[in-house]
Image (cartoon, rainbow, N blue to C red):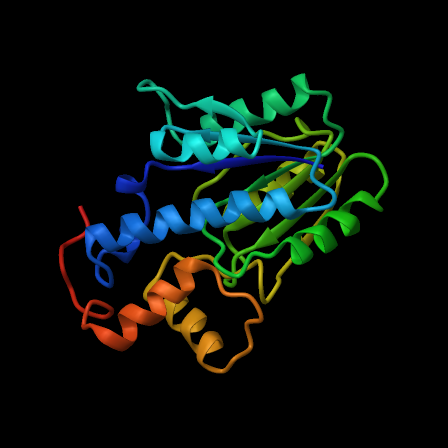
Length: 232
């Protein structure tokens, strides 16, 4: 399984959390989740290669240390869909049969959960697309395609439906999944509350540094839930 991970510059990430976290807190959480995602991929027993598409220079040493491929977005990058499609083209150049696009903001991500998902997809017939939606069933947290270029990237409003329709039009089988672990991304205050509730209840056997940091902030400061800036 080849994996493409698009990662925004930390300073630009998680703007929808501006009402809950200070800018420096959003940067730190974004950094921790990005690093957690890459380290988790390195623990997978099924991942054969990883391309990181990013303009965040501070992430490059870790990606190089893990022997991951790096595609720089550059100053003329035209958004998430183009960045992902560049990564998918790299997967095709590397001879990948299946390609997973994984976003780096899934705080409950584990190698075990990923490998179970990969095994489920790999057991399918040719021309298959597997989509893990967000909790609302609208966004696309994880997208796996065989072949890698079966469909283009259609991230945006209701992207899960857009990807599914494009896959069916291309003659691919489609499976839409919702997972308690993999469907929870960190975009809204409600998502933070869900993560912290799970941590308090002891339901998480392995906590990423980002989750621990959110829990510390919640317990020791007023940063969570306090408005610090308006979303631009």
